[in-house]
Amino acid sequence: MNLFNVYPLFDIEPVKAEGCYVWDKNGNQYLDFYGGHAVISIGHSHPHYVNKISKQVSELGFYSNSIQNPLQQELADKLGKASRKDEYSLFLCNSGAEANENALKLASFHNEKKKVISFTNSFHGRTSLAVAATDNLNIVAPINETKNTLILPFNDESALENAFKQNDICAVIIEGIQGVGGINIPEESFLKRITDLCQSYNTVFIADEVQSGYGRTGKFFAIDHYDIEADIYTMAKGMGNGFPIGGLLIHPKFKSKHGMLGTTFGGNHLACTAGISVLEIIEKEKLIKNANTMGQYLIKELRQLSTTKIKDIRGKGLMIGIELFEEASSIRKRLLFEEKVFTGSASSKNTIRLLPPLSISKVEADLFLENFEKVLK
Ligand SMILES: Cc1ncc(COP(=O)(O)O)c(C=O)c1O
Image 1 (tube, rainbow, N blue to C red):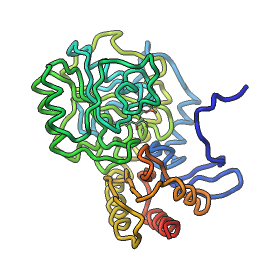
Image 2 (cartoon, rainbow, N blue to C red):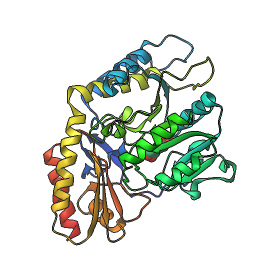
Image 3 (tube, rainbow, N blue to C red):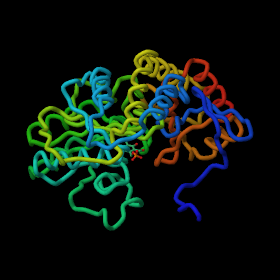
Image 4 (tube, rainbow, N blue to C red):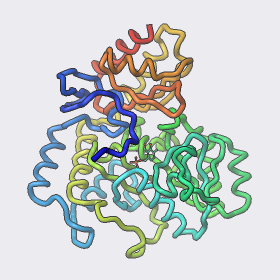
């Protein structure tokens, strides 16, 4: 049987990974500045993570959401502390798209409205509502098309104010920092305007922190860089360090009802164990502070490179975009095949995304800078 061919693939087969490095089947070592698409938060194969998951799978890998599973509460307690959102509640699911899908449903259950605002260059996932709120017509199937989503210009306060005038907006969904779109940072005043309008019009403010959350930007959530609170935060990528898990942090004003949301696999024993061990390592190794320090270092050094090829450096913490004056694909390929460095692409073709594990040290940062400078020359 063939695989359904939807992914363009690099001809590299990783067989082992540790910390910030990956090895292919031929024994080549790669520096991982892509983190398997912003997923690797604590570093590959962390011994605490490996031990906890191995022990859990040998005892109980899975049982359904119809029984007591204290691991879910343990994860919620740890998450409440790490995010400083202890008063919020947690719903667990399996992916970023599912987190956003549930957030949008919950918003509509809550205020009984239907229209969703999202923004240009957004990416919220591939399930029906999430993809309808995503600014990429190529991945919206006819069955996903809806009049209920409005994609407004990013950072445009007057377009936002106009859209609210009908008083029928159910939710505004915005990425903490746009990832797939090319590392675009929402302005503080724009986020504040969203918060104010959502409060005035009984609209739900959803922060999509699937990529920008879990400490990647040097704060637990990217919007924590400002004095702003969302009604719902969605999370996934860094949450399980590769084990599929997603979740929503839900403000106390939302009332739950049995059966309102649900999933077979969400919050299973293995996923919770992965999530708990990730938070333990983030705390013990102070990885959020490290993401902040290393991010500032990388951004400063990148801005000082003597090259005419770089147009802009954007980002916070270890979510960094390097925009070139030319298309980035050949530079990325040379980094990968000649220098053995993984980086990420973006839908804006001139931008390279850096999304390394939050555990990188100055050694890895310097190694990246050295290789990047070499390839630019
Ligand atoms: C901001 C954001 N939201 C949602 C998603 C969808 O996540 P998943 O691929 O886990 O469904 C992504 C994935 O790249 C993302 O970057």
